[in-house]
Length: 124
Length: 331
Length: 151
Image (tube, rainbow over all chains, first blue to last red; front, side):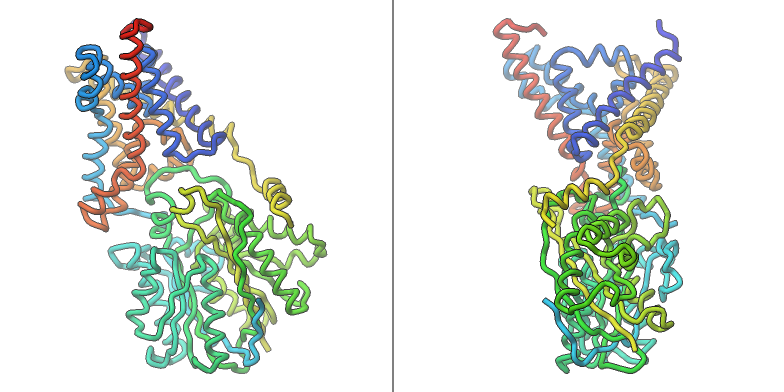
């Protein structure tokens, strides 16, 4: 059993490193945030295909579930689980089963925000 | 192509309206009105842009004791799709109107057309200028206002401002338009939408050189050559280009840039200000006042514009740029 | 001045991107956001009936909720300028992309504005997430079928 302090440290370091990779893609690769996030999502999916992302979550907790890479991981995880159960058809149906709380949360809170906030530029 | 105006049309008066953030501008004392609301009490940013233009025109009418029926032409533009803010303001003013698009160079291209109409005898009073509203331009060209993207040191801040001038027949003791150069479109292959100064500097260089050459002038014939919105880094690049072309060191201090100076040394604006409203506000507000006080006798205003759209950028095209110059004298 | 000559001059004068400082800021802010996520996870595990396996979903939803508040009050924009990828890569950055677009396009109505533009920034993340998940699953199935890999 890890101490709570140690698990915070692991979340901080692993999450920080994933963000640094993103920063390097933006600054050295000269790509937009949209390109960068897309690359990281694909990377998360591939890592899960190699069975490497779950161990990372076990190690770092929120350090691995909060970065956008976990998006690719959770989608792939759902697809793989269905594929394992139902074979070829599972690859297809798995895509309709999988979901991500990040997407639903963003939709709901985005809608609420649109109702209550106004775009506010820098004014002072 | 240089145009020399025989009749020397005069700049009769000016109107400058800016947004709340622009009270931090070093030029703020030269603005006629500072709105406390970025949308000028309207519900959308685009309507706010329209109000900036309407207010600026009303200020001109009031200052010169005219009403809208006395105005022959309104010439201007902005950066919103199809220039609807200017179109809608023209609906309110109800005068003959031509919308012009040279991106941030519209402040000068509209003055050139107004001077031509005056020279032709077709216009006694023409209002010319340009405007921009920060939020509406950001959403058009970049990201939503509240999106947290990291902008590099070369990026510039689009101002919320409308600057317009009233151009009419030559009058004593008023600044007049002596000549103008309509710029070519220059493309040195720049692709970085966050480095407009670097994209536009060659266009400014080309137009200034063409103007001086055709007019057989030297840099020292001008008190100042003020570009529109090259920003701090773009201005440095322009000065370096002239230095390489053999201009004397003391003459290089004649170059100034409205965008580089607009927000002073405030680092949160990165490389400075930009937008059609930037050069329009500084030229119509600050510069006209410098003529009145007698500080300047002859200046060259060179508004620069990057002629890109988000579409062309995403399709991988480069950023073509232009610069229009207008030579203003006094006395 | 030739184009190539000009580009050399331009590159000389243009300040370089401070990659090291940017990475440091991204590391610290990104790490902090993940630590906050870790704290939220602990709260859900201690006070609610969640386990280490199931706590991911409520954690992510709470993080996106926080992103909504920061976005609406204009603070995520400032954080993004400072932290770069540090605030863009965590799921709060995804939330910021969706929420800022939703707020921005409210002026065109709920259907054509908010509905039509909500995913204009974040849509590519969903697209590539789903498509890559599909192909990873497909490839893995093939590899397992021919006996090269195992689930």
